[in-house]
Length: 299
Ligand SMILES: [Mn+2]
Image 1 (cartoon, rainbow, N blue to C red):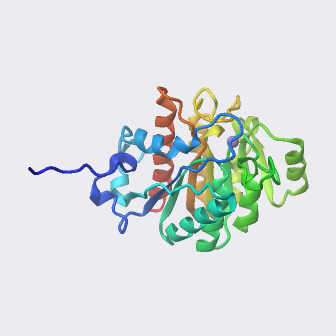
Image 2 (image 1 turned 120 degrees about the vertical axis):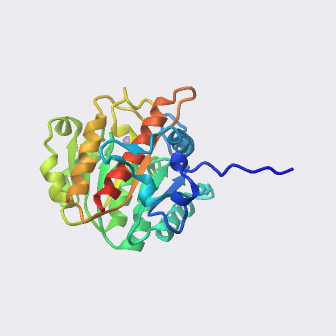
Image 3 (image 1 turned 180 degrees about the vertical axis):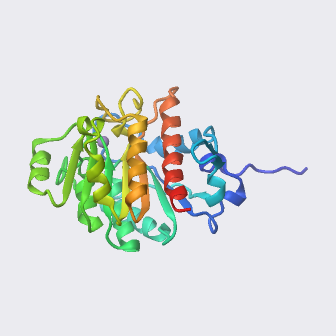
């Protein structure tokens, strides 16, 4: 008897011709790594939940008036196997995979996983592309030198990005940080600029953001907890007074309009809540919209 297997679910449920590895300009790398989450857990389920929810996202984009993913193609890699032997090994593997997948004319999208992976995404991007600037959307500064005894903590993610990127960092939407992080920001104005949530609500970040990315290659890291907790309850360390959907997209538009190019972006820290699918769908739609803004900006 003849029977067929369904293809493994890829991001957006694309047909083979729009998700082929050799022709797709966008590559999705799921990294379900979670070792150091400090409060709510479950980010290891994040990539799978985003890919599952993405099956429900319409390919048609009202802004671009086309099913834009079909034009540039999106290849979904199998999830990177989390290595729990040691954080050093795990992070070296993430960096190596990112370096291997980063194409000169492509766009890499990493789905986390806890935010600590971003330090190693930066390491891999630097190996492939050289130095770049980083824009971070987050509720938390993530600038601790180390946390709970490890430099690979999610709470140290942006210190590792600073170590590995060869460029400065702009943080947007922050509303929670420690006194040490506040002092680090004050002492390193040439390395880190911060616009807290209320400043983003007031639009005070817009000119500085444009200038920050002007003519530069950019890595955009989106901790899903940048969004207001009412929109995004499915995350381990939620904070009130977060960004709204249109504020996040405005930031992405400003980056795309001024940067030389966006090399890569990540969406991290989704911790799915069983039975609550709206946050997973939001994360999937955000992922598609960010890649659409980047890729359509290149056409
Ligand atoms: Mn965060």
